[in-house]
Picture 1 (cartoon, rainbow, N blue to C red):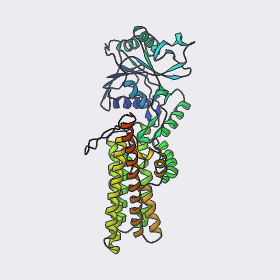
Picture 2: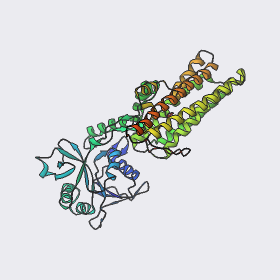
Picture 3: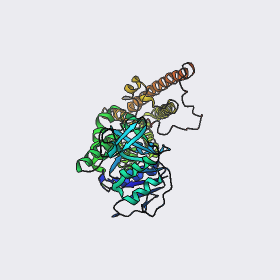
Picture 4: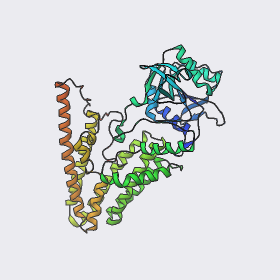
Length: 442
């Protein structure tokens, strides 16, 4: 599939040129080649494996499905993903007046541009699915005549329309509703507005109390500034892991106060990489492995603390640590399996779950246990209290998951409701983007 960016912009939003953001979004949906129109002051031939070139009037573009985007617009990646699903010419619209007015009849476009000025209640947001002939007319007429190209498309064939407001707003990975956005970047004010929107749209709904009331505002402040520097999310992840394993060594050698204080620093910095990736449009599949490494050093802290305490308390700390790790692994698996079956994460499924997730067993709150009992001079009870916290979480998650899934099973059989997703035992297959890891702190 190909795409055309009309008059690409190198205006930086959170440190990343607008054209690069668009190219990354197009690459993620499987676009193989991108054609640019307009000023050729910055030549591009390739971008992260994506073929990029300037459109010429000599080009013969015979594709019947080409994504057309205005280069001075910032698009929510969900909009670009949605336009890719269309099979016939389609315009994405928003309500209200705009540069390109559109009149519609149901889900069909009646008029575009000047003919729609009087009757058009909608505006084109700058993205469409077009055919090769529309792209060829852009090469002949110039990017400023994009209305002419769209008008010709309407004359040749029926054009469907979709409203931005009709798109799903709930983002499972972020556990919150975020209205799909698009912004024209024409002024410095537009750029600042876009940066605020990106920071907000990259924010997960924090799970525990510490993340919600302390980490969240600090993360936003830091990421807003960090995004303007050439710092990558993977570099932040590397720093987090270096400090985290230093904490493990400190626990194992008995430097408990320093180690427990550093756990809070790790918990805070660990939220920077994921949010930075979302804000800079640099989300990758490799980045998803971060949670596995987070889990590894989280378990290492419990083991290292138990090892040091075993030097004076015998095997009891080690036994409690082992049981705690088993419980954490169990309720995280319950959480993941529930999301795969129900299509929504357990901690967002009901009112009780949304309240309980603020105090459920997570790394941030386990760190509070450790610091508290270290300050009291009885660190052994940190292992005991973490075990109790994990046990309560495991019992509640298991019970609530069984209750909800049983109701879904009864509903699917008795009330004609569609059956929940059946997951083959042992495969670990998951719905794409359906749930987020219960242990994620960012």
